[in-house]
Length: 221
Image 1 (cartoon, one colour):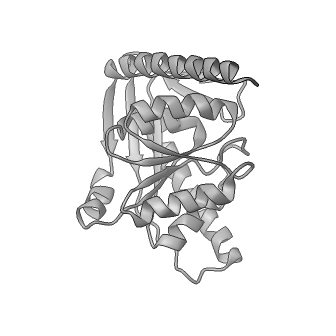
Image 2: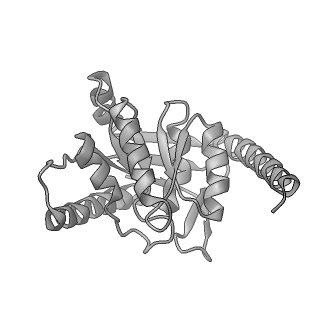
């Protein structure tokens, strides 16, 4: 690809990102948000403790919007849809680390760990970038273990939404004027000496906690 083609592609990408961010921000401005469990991470932040937020890829939109402007660092894949997501969340005040379990994973984990050690909280969708849907990969737990940061599960739901059914993650986009629910769970600490088998058990525990939160936000409770 020539420099001109690359520059043109980057300009188009930025334009799409700017437009997408504006449209989504306008959409969310019509929605009402009900947030539960905020005190959990706010208490940790007040003590100077960064956290590792985990939420499923299909529900990331409402969660990242609700945390806009808080200086978080998000893990975004290097796949094509990750380019667009990155453009949107960066306009919501996030910094991004690019990589995933299938591409750039080691460098992404180092980048996330570096951010946490600098006092930044991070956001990870542990079933991304290509699934299986709502099955946790170990990256988030490894970052938490390396840095001594607690894992906080997050779930989002909406009273009315569009669902992108032809995607692996069944991506949710709240409809205008819907009621958006965001729920934060209790922190889970990963002991530094936990082995691979122990991490697998903890991954199942996080999945269970996310499942409970998802059931609550989807039921409107």
